[in-house]
Image: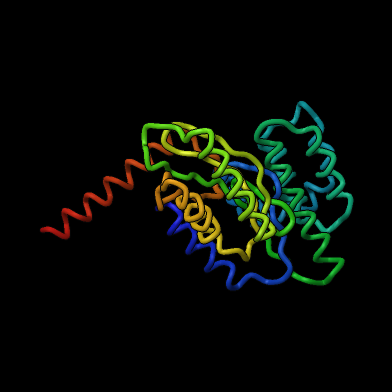
Length: 252
């Protein structure tokens, strides 16, 4: 279902992934990430890194506006001086709201710059909405019930959770949480980048369906965000309508 295009894009990106890469651990809204990198591109064209470095203490001044603080954050993130890194590290602890998320992104860039300078190696930065840890990315997966208006029974819930945890361990993955709702079950997990993620979850479905066939073969996989119940239902209906349109086109 929804995982097809996402899965292909991930697999394609992994084919050319170098050995040295860094994963953003925190969960940061993709929209904010895009704004950060667009803003960064414009700032780098102005070449004001040194000026922002000199005035970096403005980050801690309540009288300084948000736009100026964004300029400082994105500029000193690529200023090759350990004092810039320490400033960002300190500001992350104090910042709030969107500025905190900008500070986290800036700190990650600065950390990569420090590593590259020390090791004399270029590093790749991987960021997703759900973040990750080490060499693992966090995924939000939704298993769809065969009975679309009913919750899984207690026995089925336990079976699904146990099979998921078992399958994750086989691939050095990590189980974080699971929720059960009418029509579907959702889970947050982490898996190494090199793992064929869709196959992991399909294995779980196959194992569970040996005991009553209570899950659909389709599922939803994303590393962009945790979806609301309304978003999941909308996505399921959208896929159903897309299939119906395809069938109509074939018949015509």
